[in-house]
Length: 267
Picture 1: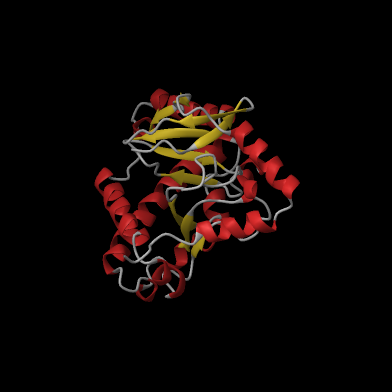
Picture 2 (picture 1 turned 60 degrees about the vertical axis):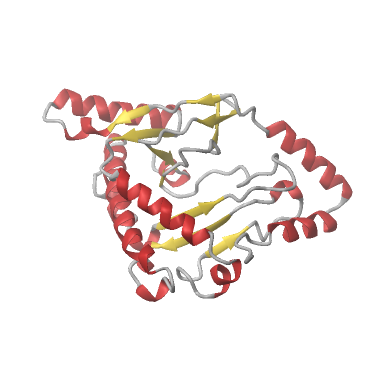
């Protein structure tokens, strides 16, 4: 059987071996402190984006207010009736499964998707910094280039449509937010063109060592806006609210929106 998972176990073992003993002990304590009870899930603010297209001015204003309030109080919210077809989301998920099930060597060394394949955390020096995950981080400027796809010919058509739909949604939401902050609607488009935008495909393989290891280490998103299509079957997304980590309950009809660090800078 050809192995599709990246050599995360080897990387982790080397980090553990080279770490100082006190770092390893401290890491276990930190991980346990930050580990979340999976039964404690939260439902993010859920916003119906049909309100933005309503002919009723009051309904549009109400939707804008909901977006602004959720962004300010949570930094996260979910959107439904977002304009991205559920069929397209399913097609993208299926293509992503096929992609990550490919042999590790073909993902890592064939120039696939602009050589954007990454796994683990190459800068980790002790276990609490390690990410048990793999991902492709593709610039939008490369999405349409046929030579990036290799044997995954069916992926290109879906990826191009998916990236376009997500970009339109990002422009819609960012326009609402920048106008609410008193800026011109076009500001986001001027500073966030294709050259600064990425499509990220994430996979979190089962971890044979410990369920307490992070898929991704705790972090903030450094960009302006992230739109996430959450796995509807597995509750893995976690966020900090009121200084406590909580798990986000999946919603198969919704997309998750995260306000990034750069957006907060222009506030």
